[in-house]
Length: 131
Image (cartoon, rainbow, N blue to C red; front, side, top):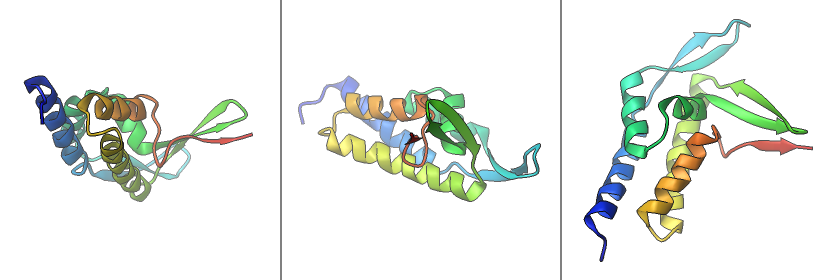
């Protein structure tokens, strides 16, 4: 393929991170307002996925457990239920894998695309803007 050792390592790290991401599970917790919200059931799995993907673990958790909606310039953070967090996890993994394929399978573009999703805290297809 003509890839150097660094690029191969980067691709393998991303693939391993996506596989770890698929192992992330969520537990139910009650919020202060009495609503069911998702929390990570295993911090080590999330930390391993974040490390392999090259993203901040706290931002990855936020991307998996919070939906951000932008309304007239204001960000509204909505905590997800465990079921919705599982869907967000799957969507994030699929989006990062699809982004890798659409970018010609270059490790740099795949890593940047995943990092942008996690760094921006977007989940379930990203932020929704209502104006």
